[in-house]
Image (cartoon, rainbow, N blue to C red; front, side, top):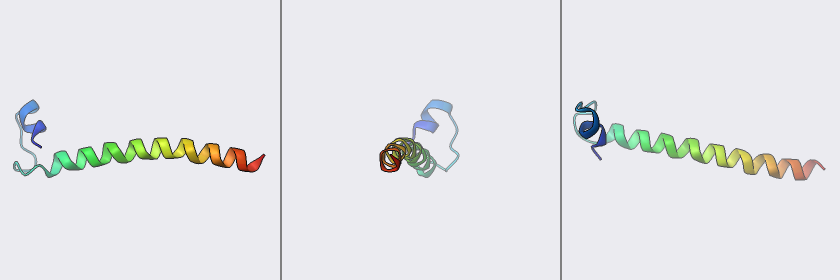
Length: 49
């Protein structure tokens, strides 16, 4: 997990990979929220009618 170091040549986390792990978690969370929002909106749309 050192893609930032390889791509940009900087080490914001001292090479331990925590920054890269945080970026991956944030991206996965955003994707889950987007997909979940659509599912919840569909569920409430069917429930109201």
